[in-house]
Length: 522
Image (cartoon, rainbow, N blue to C red; front, side):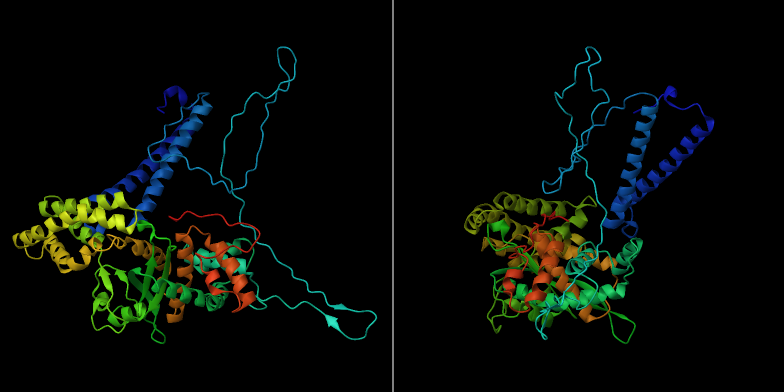
């Protein structure tokens, strides 16, 4: 809305304040725009990472909303009705989930009688609007009483129910509170000390060391679930595999060493498979061949990975369990060409990207089809693209400057060619390793909020919690509801509860209240 002089107040002090506020907002928005410009066009060292860029865009959107609100206030003060701005494409108002409780409020007009005839007014229609509200988190104290019972007619015998079992025997937290603490740290990436600060605002004094103790005791119960899930994944026919760093404090040195969280994942939805999606993380001190062998054990199926050399032993003919099959990632190949193509004037990189895009277009069309159908389409449509690409790459390589990004990308493609074209042999194989790379991102976020773990056991516990929480998210399960229920059940039953029933993808909430489904993209 463009304001006119008539819309502005007459008070000079108010006008000065409005001008100063406007100049401050303009300077702030210009600073954000400059940052985004450097992100797009600046040197690599000046570029923002994804999180920094998101923070800048948040500030920009907040400033824009502030300006719109001020314009609405000015219009209201002037007695005008501000025309509501049209929503931009892709910014449609979110629909509110059906499982949320609805609280109805009816606002009646002041008039109850017709001003013309004095008759009683009756409702002919209503304008309905919905707003999302929040009830701040409420903590409560569960007071458990176990009466001691005795017979008045007899002299001996006192009867009392046994004390209930808990993750922390005789301790403060319920299993629901422990689950909440774990989800906040390992799903929402809120460190224990920040959670302690939030509790302090409620007048509750619980330090981070206490929360660490709770988490360690929970890990002692949940570790066998992760081990069972890992075994379940390794019993399948295909796995996605990737690894990322995990900084760990080296005992007695005061220094930080680099360990690794290895992820094995399953997601058969792309070829219509029925096995539920899952991911299991394993902490290991290293990244070499010996650790890859330890991770995969006797697995002889298909390993989809990024071409890292440690996985090559899978195809060794003399492997104890027999050779497996390696399938490499076209997304990694594409990134190599993209670095040159985005700089412009890179016709070979552009052509390589065009050919790879053709493969992805075919994949998008057959996603969700049976392996047999996918293989048939690939043989008919993708195979000619592949057959044409190989000689073209070999022809282009000697024409490029040695050491150029595109030459390196072509070298990588040719060196991994056998694994890259495996998708033409089996309809279950995906074109890339993005399934497991998406499961690595939450680990990266957690790593940014906790620069290192205190010891190897802490990293192993991290792997345990991340495995269960991320598998819940893959299945659309609320991880807080899952952990609260499973912790209570596993402590109560010990080893008697069938462990497979407690895995995230087999779990049925034993509590009376159903847990809401969460956004899988979170």
